Every structure is written in structure tokens, then in C-alpha cells.
Image (cartoon, rainbow, N blue to C red):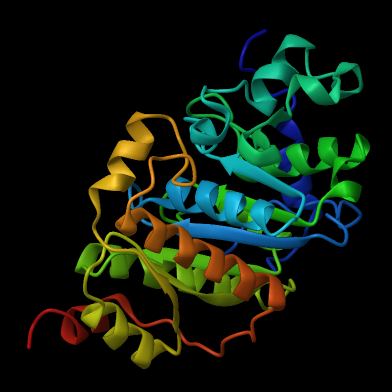
Length: 307
């Protein structure tokens, strides 16, 4: 099969049908089918600068929820499809991969073709992405949720975690925000990470005008200090929900293809596990939505690092 316009031609039609933009000035965001809703599960979308540790955070948070007795589904939304490999110990086929094998006839797929069980029962899906230079990530997310609905997996799920690639640079990869109850931002205590966080805050701010998503808070990762994060949070209206230090165990867990809950226990590791469990319990109990206002790009230069 070539990378011609099937099925991505649907994107152009959907965009035209949408009429005037609804998700921010100048938006050409693909409008997802309003009938395709996840259901009663609590849905979290995790964002952050590329390489900041979103997949590590997502996978370990998924395990923490599962250890609270919750039925968890993690959906990786990155074309490199490595969100769930510490849970499954391998790179699983993506939704786009398996759709291509049946010439995009989704009715021919079985649940086991694209949903894989990971550590402690966490169910894992990798949405993947369109062929390079074509298509839209928003379409991929929409197709993934549609398939999960058709196979009734979401009816038996308590928590859904979307692990979304890098910085938000287009409406397509902001699509998980249309399904999420809360967005969480992973950041480090440095300028580049916080600059990216501000862009993500702006995307969430735009989406919250038309969807139910609200910002839950910030997860400080690989950060022994949080002074720069704290300064930004105070200015914008955010709060830090959890902090994980710059520990080598994170790197080693990725090399071992293991979650932090499977590593050899040390006092340091037990403290990290405890923090993940505390975060999961807090999110399950429910968090108040934050009232926030993103900064102008130039203002961040004045705020951070130039004391």
C-alpha cells in the first residue's frame, strides 16, 4: 500500500466541515467525532519537552495505579512507539502498523492485534503515527480510541493514560486533550524544559475553552531542586504535584526494560516508588482544576535565569 491519501484524506474533509476554527485563533485542528468518548474512566494526558522522561513517568504511574487495584490502559502517542516497552519488555506493533496489514479495514482487527498486557496487568497500546511527512497525529489518536471503543476495552478500564510526544507543536498531537480530564506536565528545573512547558500550558488553555480537559499540575522530573519551576508556577498559576530527583535508577530501568517497581529495592528506589504511589492516590482522589495563564515567550527570558 502506498502512502496516498487513504485514509488521511478524511482529515481535509473534516477540517473543511468544521467551518470556522474553534480551538484557538487560526486553528485548523481536526475535529474528532464527538460520539467517540472514552466513557467513565479517569483520563490523564501527560506532556512535556522531548526526552524529559514522559514515558518513564507514564509507565511507572500506570503501575502505581494498578497497584491501587485499578484497571489501567496506557496509550503511547509517539511514532517511535516506545512508551510502553518497559511494561511489555518489547516494542509492540502500533495501531497504524496493524491497520496497514488489513488495508485499513478496522473491522478485521482483533483486540489482541493491538492491545498487549504489560507488567502488573497494565494494558498497553501504541498508537504510532502517520507515514513521515503525511497525515496527522490527531487522526491516529482518534482511530485508536475508536478501535478501543468498538472492542469494548474502555468499558472495563478505570484509568487511561495518554503519553504524548514532545512539545505541543500542532493541533493533531494536542488531540488527547480532547479526551482527557486532566493534563499533567513533566518538566525539569531548567530553562528549556520550562519554556516547553509554557507552550503546553498555552495548548491546554486553548483546548479547555471547548473541551472538559483541565490542567492538573506539574511533575518535576530529574530535578534535585525546583527553584526555577517554583518561580514559573507562581507566576502562571500552577503547582507541583510530585518531584523525582536526578537519580541513576531511572536510566538503569530503561536499559533493563523494567519499570521502577521491578528493580532491585534500595532505600532510594523505595522512596521513588512511594512518591509514585502517593501521586497515583492523589490523582485518583481527584484534583481541583487550576486557574492559570500562559506567559509570552519573551517574558520567560526575563523571569528565569537572569537574577
